[in-house]
Image (cartoon, rainbow, N blue to C red; front, top):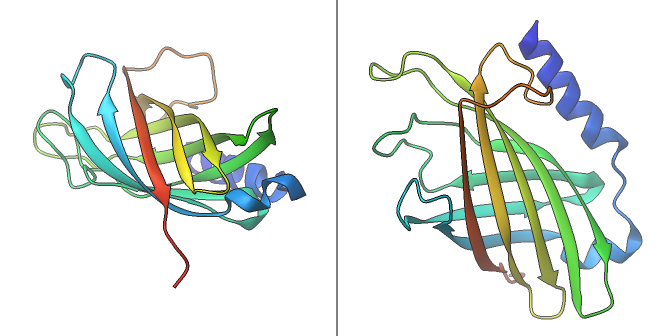
Length: 165
């Protein structure tokens, strides 16, 4: 039941989210470098590939997906995004993603992650920067409820949009 709800939530958000014309300049795929800000991973650095697609659909893959010490392996993140233009040359971007971790011998209980990104893009240069928060919940919990997460981590990131071939 919870899996059906999560799938419906993601598909419903994406299909209802229309990207404003002002936001078309930030469409694309970005390679980012992330640095831990939660203190849990003591400055760990990793990489992500974030894609912002038409229709408000977003995906992200992470260099730690295979699992790193203390964390379960997890899949590709999927969700939605939107933006707002500001007074300066940067465009604010908000992204909400969902993800599942995989059970392992050390961590036999799968989790669902709610990933929230608040960033900004310079549409001319393709530079992106911001903060990401990750909240992990038991697999049977609605991550959009007011339930306290099992774990909450965060990191800053910066990167650049991949150039067109």
